[in-house]
Length: 270
Length: 251
Image 1: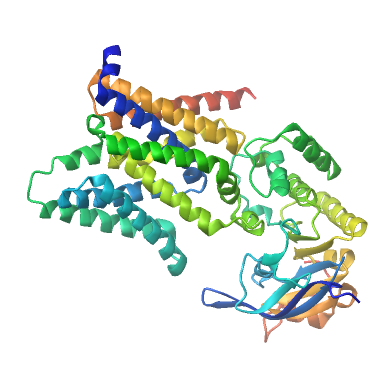
Image 2 (image 1 turned 60 degrees about the vertical axis):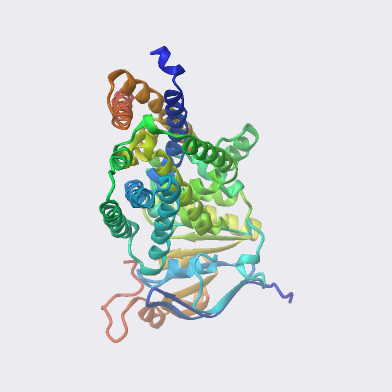
């Protein structure tokens, strides 16, 4: 096992896992408390359209997936504002459109498209330098948001009217949050795959919620669970020679159920 | 009389939400230090009016001036708003102290230092919330939560305190003591208070101004002369047919 740490691909996978574990579980606390978990899988499917476009054009899929996903995210925000439809309905519409486009892009591409599978199910072996650099930049931006935006996001997550009455720029803040969530999703594709990506945004924060009395502690615990489960999942997947994304998600789910059990026991003791 | 003798001036206010006109023809001037009750049936636009007063909802026409200025130009902390507690998200992980702190910081606090927590504890004791400073919000009763919200409002020492149905969902004993706290605060510090209520007998006894509302302004003026049979009929009954309500009885 230790020798695996000397392989560059494994180092890259672990680094990418730690970074995406950090960003996903950090933004996830807002996703879970705003009850917009559906946005995770919605934007992941939008990312599929973007990845397929990259494969069709023969460019690095990340470069097309990031703008494509951001575009869909912005469309959701503005359609919600101007149509009075709920976010989940709009996500449903755009999610379907993106997947349909993705399928067409892959169908039009006549060459072999096995690459598409590594995006659907994740593939740590194929994490490249570009993806690592973007993940690192995203993590740095995320740390900055902790100092500048966490307190505002948290306030409007608790009660949008109270935050509005205190002049928190809610619309601006929401757009920034959804943009960063979009980038987080695209970056995490290689690690967990499109199909399972929303796990990062939901399972660590939901687990943290069970044992947190304040939103600050929920954020910290969620990030710890997110990073720990990434590392554990990648190591297990290497040892067991099974897909990393699935193993990470199973690790997260096991942590979740252990915490559920502990919280039930603690509650009964009181 | 100084130019700001009226703390709040609302003129020709009309509010449209989606395709519905929710409020129209609202005109009133509220003197500084008043205690105003906004009274009207469900769906009469009370909450929308309050949200318009604090700038959360933008008027279609007309305007709202506080201290002669637009709400957006006022220094932060001038107003303090207590929303209906039934709308609060109880799944959010927060303790009473976190909510009160947001009254000082106007942001959510990641952690609270001892200087701030002492300040919060002092005001929470003042409003009878000293026993549950660190309790999760989800574990508080309606009356307890209302006290926490009140502490949150008072800690910033606002010029105007706005409360949306502070008496709804709490028992009578709590209601009486919260009404008493608000009245005392209004009298002691001269803070203008605006309160939404269904309960026009409480409005009659505690406040000095009343706005009767049913999409349109039925009455604005002193509370002692507000509750005539005709005004109540116009406020609480649909146009064209009465519901046989015996006014004078609390229903």
